[in-house]
Image (cartoon, rainbow, N blue to C red; front, top):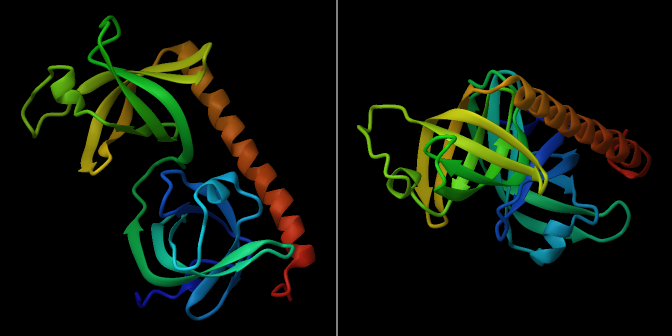
Length: 236
C-alpha cells in the first residue's frame, strides 16, 4: 500500500471514476466512506457492474483528479451491500499519484470513431473515443493506425490524423489531431491525441458536447449527494 493517505486527497461525497476488472468502461461513482485502508463507493444499479457480475475478490480501479495530481487507486471488492443505499467496499492495496499536466478536464466517454490519414481519404480505422476535453482526446483501436493507414514515420516525429467521431448516427464531431502518446496492450493500441485543427462548426459541436457531459456530472452529483447525505450511516 502506498504511503499516500486517502484522506489527503479524498473525502466523503467526492465524485470518482471506477472500473470493474471485466469491463473497459469507467463508471461515475460517489465515495460513501473512508477509513485507514478502504473506501466505500456507491454502485447503485449501475448496469455495467450488473452485466459483469461483480463478485467478492474482484479487482476495481478508481481514479480521481485534482488541479495538481491524478490518482489511481487499485483494490479488491471485500463487501457488497444490497440494502439502500447500495454500495461496495473496496480494500485499496495500491495508490499511484501522477502530476496533472492536462490543461483541461477530461470526461470519460465511449463513442464510435473513424481515424483517417486525412479528411479526403476513404480508408479509415475503426476506434473508440474513451475520453474528451477541450484540447484533446483518447482513442482505442485494435489496429496500429500507422501501419493500417500506411503512414510510417520516424518514431521521434509527431503525426496528424483526421478523426470522425459519431456522437449519434447522424451527428459527427470532426477534427485533425496530433498523436502525442501511443501505448499497446492485449486489447490493441491506445492513442492520446491533441486537437490540432478544428473548424468553427465542429468547435461549436465540441463545446455543446462538453457542456452536456458537465451537466450530466453535476446532475449525477446532486442526485447521489442528496441521497448519500440522507442515507449514509457514515455521514456525521
